[in-house]
Length: 348
Ligand SMILES: [Zn+2]
Image (cartoon, rainbow, N blue to C red; front, side, top):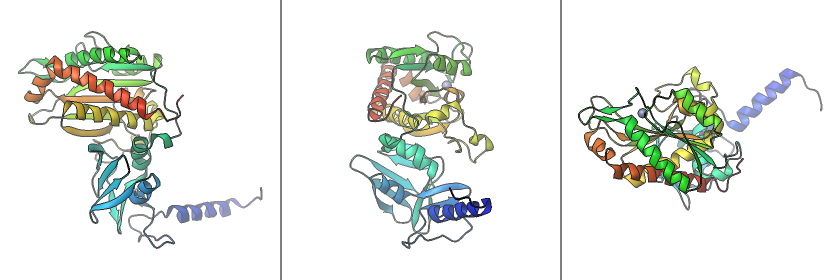
């Protein structure tokens, strides 16, 4: 290899980066690529973005404006995605999915963040194109009933309902269904006991879990009309969680839960799809959080908040065994859909 001075190399690398990525900051005028169109890649407030049309075209989607300069629809033979400027919401096949960063409109181009492109859209829309890490082949599934013992979880006080009771009931129903599907099931608890959060992840990791499913019910004080289901998976490294208004240095930490970023996404999407679709629950969205159990598990993991105990109508439904059986069936169906989705994927 010809030896070149370090400074020359670095300036060449820098020039190459600028040329190939078309990096521009918010303050700089938009750069143009040789074809005369806007840059494929831009940087906005420290976040790397990619032209949504270019990204989706590479993956077999055609884009068309829903409202020019504001929202775009991407369509393939099997999927449809709607994305709107300045919003973190995307709609994938009718399902509300929260991006880490809002889409942005610059020049005549709509951009999505590169982390969202690679770690949200790609695993859901083309799982077979994700080569690393390999998806764990599904054998051992750990079911985590939220709360327990002195930790009641959320409550509906007028109806005397505790989240911990329903979470365990659904977990036991799900165990029965998944055993029938042929999986080895490990529970983080099978009775009314307190299990610390790190211990739940430890149980999963010691069992060699290939999948981790945590079951919860929600509540919000002072807003009795709030209802619906939301599904959480681990926030990717370098991205803020759905509930965080801004980025934080702690976002840059690689947690064990990040080893399976693409598979967390794919799992969460299919679980959310089934819970919302089968239960007819209001779709509050597929979201990101660094909850302890999601942060610490070595396998793909998901946490489901399947309705609000603080909403009296929803609490009544949750207190029926029919609803809880439907929920368990939706979760089992979500596992089945995820298993089908990883079939063409390289597994370990
Ligand atoms: Zn809970």
